[in-house]
Length: 385
Ligand code: NAD
Ligand code: MG
Image (cartoon, rainbow, N blue to C red; front, side, top):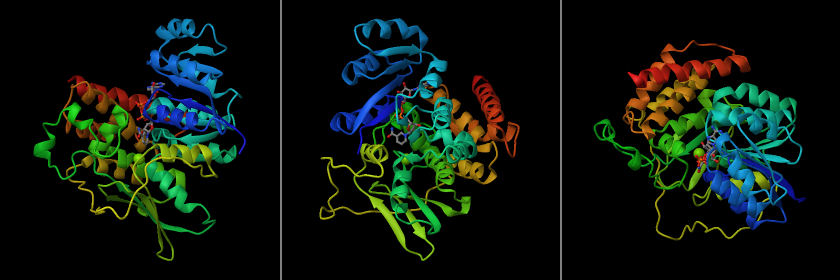
């Protein structure tokens, strides 16, 4: 394999730092050419000094001088601001973008990378939730591969390798159930941010940790799967599997099921996406079937975790509804992380915003941007009350 030049958008996050671990462990295979961060200038500088990229972008323009000065003695080019992020995505100094920004903010740079003909390793599921049709169509037009990094979608992708045109009957997305599996509304009503941030199987960024606790994450993943694998909503099932050993499954038309398994470690799907179609060796811990361990499966409790039901509604409804769901959810999670609203209030904010925002059956990209703004404003107005 020739050395692949990677642009990590969101290099200071949970996915971004693990991607750099993979690059550090395989310097012959990968180089880091673009690194970006929103606010963490200290870590971005440290990463730049270690990996010597072509370009770094700091989102927060107030931190430009600090980063620029710290890297003045190097060849690293420093840029700042949201526009610079998109301009960096348009550069030619890389082969694959690892889209590891969190939330809606990841959409525009990723679209730019696709229109620039760059392969995408996609962690930022919100990109497909917001404007999946446009992203996928542009990728097809540009013949750009979108390789999933999300563990469930990486699992499905791996199950599909070698299947050619064989049809999928359905996919089964596994869900850990998050830290509040089995809990009921009378418990959830009192949950605070610090408790919700503690995931049993994965250590992740704040937003996705809250989404995992509310099961919104699995809802976003259903929509992500629809676009990645060209599925109808009825073909997408969710199953709670608390141990997170089976990362997801595909059932084919002959009834045969394929599962991808392993210990929960995001470095594996990150490495797989970066090295695809090759597999590269590593020394991560292995799953051992001989150790006493029971794998359990159960239906998700969508009466308690209503976000999953709302996301399923958005999946079936289509149009700009997933975009509205995502925008309202980002506002709600942000407010919950600041102790402004309670755990169950997040669902209320999303539900009401879905009811009140203008529905569009077949939005243009511009209309997706507008729907995002409209839904954010409405959701925020609910929180200020
Ligand atoms: P994180 O919060 O740890 O990191 C987010 C990164 O994005 C940081 O580098 C931050 O600087 C940058 N960022 C934040 N806001 C930004 C903005 N407005 N503009 C530009 N950059 C911004 O998040 P994470 O857990 O690494 O998740 C990243 C993405 O990957 C999310 O979409 C998440 O759903 C997805 N994902 C994460 C995991 C995981 O294990 N962490 C697993 C599957 C999917
Ligand atoms: Mg996932």
